[in-house]
Image 1 (cartoon, rainbow, N blue to C red):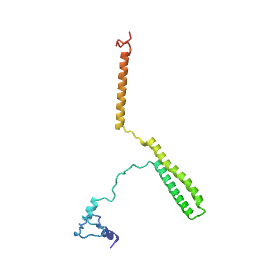
Image 2 (cartoon, rainbow, N blue to C red):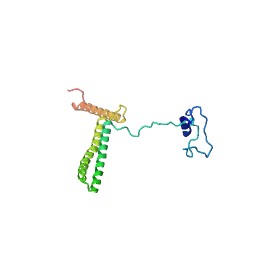
Image 3 (cartoon, rainbow, N blue to C red):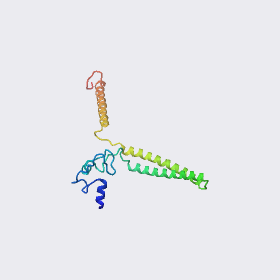
Image 4 (tube, rainbow, N blue to C red):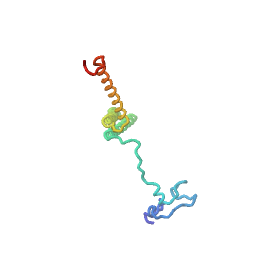
Length: 178
């Protein structure tokens, strides 16, 4: 058989990838290669129409901002190197090698650098969130509530000033000076 025919027989698909192919239902109880009990037993054309090869699903979390991503990758590399150095220092100490002392010193220095790298991720994330994190939309509920509260406070102040002005200028209640 040619290569296309072997693939078609192996995966149970006709040469036309489901277009114009006859139904290939098997007898009950008989399974082809790679089929589990209860698997799909329709024609390959129906299978191709019912199930897509790649289904795009939305991400559970939004993508990290680029500066935070860079800091995280940098921190991960530094932590990985630190762990390798610590492991090397440990094995050199077990083997009583002369390299143990320099490796311990470099591991301590790398631990300080790894701590700085992890803190850098945290600080970068906080800075990015403060600069770019809050996006206010005109239809935001919180923004609308703040506007309503401001309007109510302004109206209360204006009403207080108006009553103060009327009553404050002479006890007679006149609007003009005597």
